[in-house]
Image (cartoon, rainbow, N blue to C red; front, top):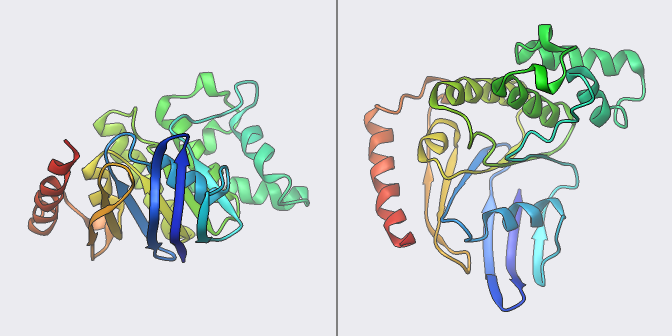
Length: 236
């Protein structure tokens, strides 16, 4: 479990967290909704240790992988070489390294793209590559900062399917920041709706059932979406 206990965080005179307390469930997909600038990315950066809290305590795992808004791929390296770059420090045996990479390329339907360079790949292929790079790294926690933000609806749904397939293959604790309520409804075990800074929880929603079978037009998801909209009115 990831737990924030009375965490305080500020940038100069701007208070981002004021005795912030929160827990994120282990081996679940925890989706974070909140207005721009409320501290969502700061939350992720504190979990992975990019920045340090001013005071308070954060209980967290050491092994963390991160999926950013941009794919952050090395343009001079093929898909396979991009994966090798991240994983070679974990898998010293070359045969094991190749086996792990082949496995994740197969899961994400990128086998035929393994020798392509990023500029030769579609946006969806690059995003899948960024996802499997994070999943292939043996972390306890996966952080995601709006990775589907620039994708159109059709492509986004396809990438979400890939993401859920990867998650089913290797479940870990996921903290997923998004502005898109539908993304949260389709992927989340829990949805946390936050208000303006200092970061504060407005409402937490628990979602049941098989994520692979969820439909946005289902009555239960429509009801939750309406409740989320009520909370987001406080963003303005």
